[in-house]
Image 1 (cartoon, rainbow, N blue to C red):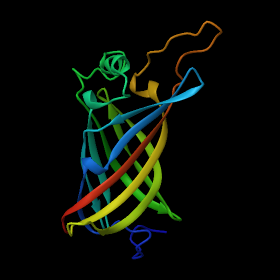
Image 2 (cartoon, rainbow, N blue to C red; image 1 turned 60 degrees about the horizontal axis):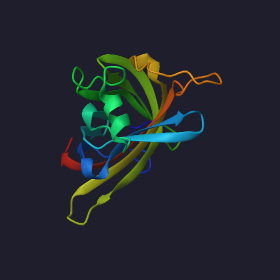
Image 3 (cartoon, helix red, strand yellow; image 1 turned 45 degrees about the vertical axis):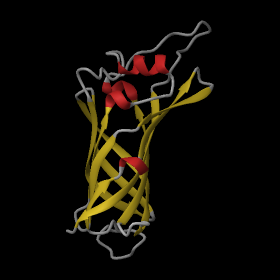
Length: 185
């Protein structure tokens, strides 16, 4: 189904929607020792969603804000071995194409980490629209993808005594956006 169809289940409403950082999250999930999942969260998120005939999504994350809620690990993530936040203070995403496949939202775009831009495909859902308690129009979008962290030179790892490595290359990314209408198309 085309995004141009006029059904509320498959169209991002026309207009400009500002991502609300207080009600949005960008997270990563990675296996540690192949046993448990460690989650990280980027609480400083900004961006916009354009709805209507030519939809788009753009967003940035302050790299130094990424937290796993462990001070030592968070410090390591800011180091050159990972995000190198002094040289690369932001991570960004810009969509190149948005479409619906059935009820699924499919977002193709470019993810930039450490100054390296690679294409990614995010799948998810347009959760809907409605008015909040203060009368502002809102929309919700939920997306996820699995990427290979080494594509962005996030190569650090440690060998395990029994073989293998501390971390896999695959990282699951999730983004949940609540956005407030700031303009009409």
